[in-house]
Length: 337
Image (cartoon, rainbow, N blue to C red; front, side, top):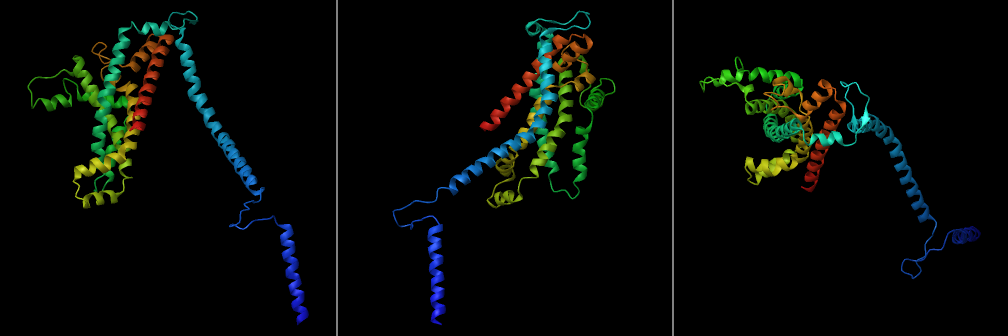
């Protein structure tokens, strides 16, 4: 028995001695010696940095096809448009293209039709974007009410948005037609005189803005309705328990949580309103005179009707710059808020 105990004690001593020789020296936490093994930490740091670098490289490889596709689809047409705007390229003249520098842009300064079309475009944007936002917000709030059957209301929101723009313009022209239009038929019960909408510049402009608002408010309503679906119902319940009225719940709960959706809707509406073309063309064809011509219509007139591709390219560059400037300005205001 004593021999077995002695043998076991010897094995324990051997294991302790081997552990002390094979392992690095570590000090007690309360002692002054704070030396620790130097090898594991650098290995971990190098391993993490290598992994970070490999993750960045993998991300770049995965994003490269998307950037290449954007460069081909967006970058090349924009660069070609810029180059064409510096050329005298008039297909109706039958002369070869030649470089003229900024002459096309200088001609814009004295072109009255350009300034008229630019003013009309900005006015349409300033009128229809806020109007579509207010109408779309009201429609979204109505569609978000707890109806027993919701799908008819939401299908009704989809109908104006799904209609083609040219078809909406034809509908607007029929509504405001002076002889047999729906609007005049309704107004004859209120006033005795007949309104000729498309003979007056301001009345024609008003009819176009009203038609654009009806068409685009459904898109805004769909975006805001999606935002309303993400608002937790517990917030309304807590506000109601605190004694907040319906108006205060809307102002302090709904609107702050709808800001991202409102920003998305406004950006899309601003860009599309600056490119307004189909509805004015089908309703008034720019008349009376040039009072309802938009910048997109003037670009089409110069490039397709007059075949002046150089001047039309310069107009398109101006439209592109205005669209980007409005978008960037609004994004900065949203971020600052």
